[in-house]
Length: 127
Image (tube, rainbow, N blue to C red; front, side, top):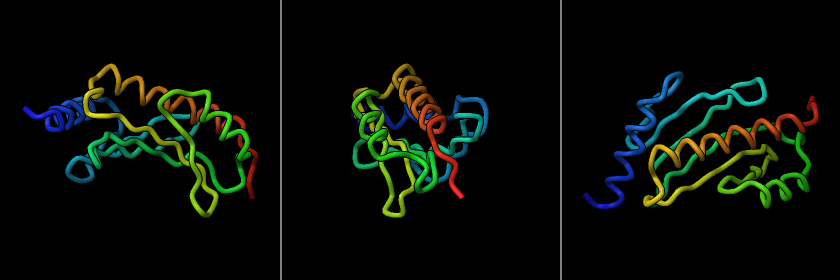
């Protein structure tokens, strides 16, 4: 089985084996809802461009300081923050196919939730 096919199969098995709100939204694409900072974190996970990609919206425009985001990007492995042109903060992670197994997927999702929780804890109220 080619590496990409094995990674796709491992990702599907892992996500479909999770308890809670996990839904398959398209071929090679899932949505799951996790808790981060006392609020739902809606995570999209997809196999795209040869990578497993996970992403989630973390905070609305203006809620997080750009300097904090840059500093956090240097501190946390695998995951990183980015902002949309409108200023909404997102968290992202990518895994190469060779790294796709249950332990590494647990690690990535755990880091996503941890970083999103910490960011939400620092977010300023907006509105």
